[in-house]
Image (cartoon, rainbow, N blue to C red; front, side, top):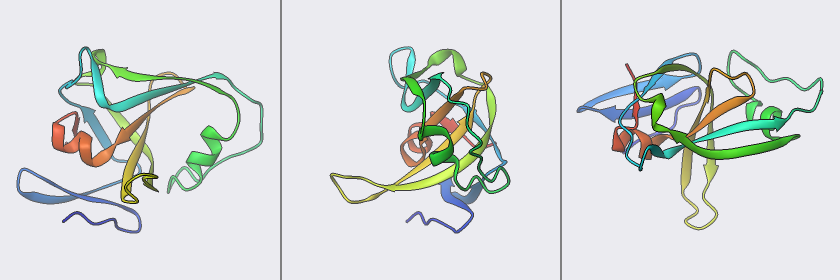
Amino acid sequence: MLAVFQTGFAYSQEMEEKNVDVGDFVVFGKCTGKNQYKFIDKYKKSRVVDTAATYDTASGEGFYAYFFSEGDFDPSKLPGTYKGKQFKIISLEVFTDKNTKEDRRVLFIKLEDKNAIAWVEFDKAIESGELIIP
C-alpha cells in the first residue's frame, strides 16, 4: 500500500520503498502511448496574466493556484521526444477523483519553456514506467 507523507510521496519501485519530494529530479521513461505519454500531460500557458501571485518554491505549496488560476492553456499529452530527459519536481498535490472518490497523486514538473509544466499522474506513471526516479 502506498502512503502520502506530509512533504512527499512514498512509492515502491523494484521492490524497494522510496520517497520523492519537491526539488528531486525525475526522468521521463518509456512512452506507453502512441508517440506520446499516456499518464503525463503538458500544460503550456498561452496567455500569461501579469500578476503578483507567487507560491512557495521550497515546498511547492500554492503552485496549483499560482499556475492554473489565471490565463489560457494549451493542454496536450507530453510528446515521446521527452523520453530520457531529466527534470525537477516543483510541486506535489493530492486531488480527489470526482468519480471514484479516491486520491490522485500528481507531480508538477517544470519543463524547458518557462510557461510549460508536466502534469504527472504519479502512481500510474510509476507503474507503467513512464516516470523514473533515479
